[in-house]
Image (cartoon, rainbow, N blue to C red; front, side, top):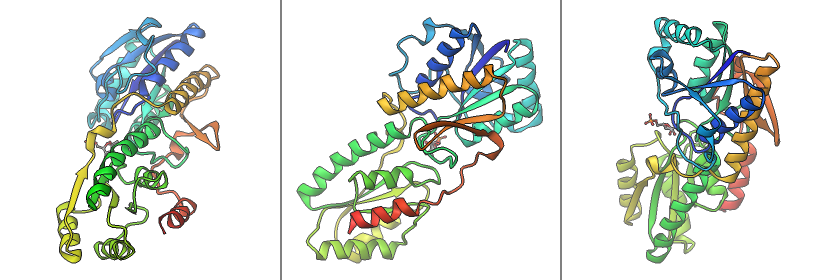
Length: 318
Ligand code: F6P
């Protein structure tokens, strides 16, 4: 390996900095120079490349966001954009790359691998929507943030016997909603994998109210409903006041949890190790507590069979 580039791409996720730190430290350990590429694939096209030293990543593990900045780059979907990126890599003598991001970023990484650059992907997304890995960097921190927010809403719901709808992120994956409910955050959940219609949400709420449970939290994954319509439907059907809270970007920032820092560090070191051993076109992950790697071309954000997790939820919500 000559020179190693590292970039973060897609939505920022807590722990991305810890991954950058691990990549730089592991490369330094192997006497490999590292170049930081700013603003993801867009920065690569625009030639925003700067050397990253040990000092740049010191005390970085606990910082949210990404020091390299990130973007969602449409230009990279075009052949011309990828050609330009390749030129920049060649001019900078960068022959290896670590891409930290989600499914879209991995698609870009795969393209560069096909063009002859040695590439390893590290999963950095709060959505946890990559089926090849049990966890992606950022998910655990976001889950804890969601639980903290929900905990506060629950205090008020309990004190006033209120019902609140909370919308969490996740894109098309229900893990943030599902795990929040498993951790004790909510009474009714609706996710892309197990979508409840308006009437079912109402009948579940009606049953709870009938059983004397008057404070209820409905956790839903984003992009699924017209929220004002859902709120109005419940209010009219059950004759109760309902509030809606969209947690939004509160979920993406903040100090990464210990779990995410450790995961990011292990994955960063593994990515460099794979590159030094000559591997390319692979994504690092974690399965059953073991760090694994799979071919990038087999990575997708498919809806995973979560029957077990959902059946446990049924038991807990009874
Ligand atoms: O992928 C992370 C994520 O926060 C998703 O949960 C959400 O759907 C999306 O990014 C929002 O994208 P943007 O930051 O581009 O609005």
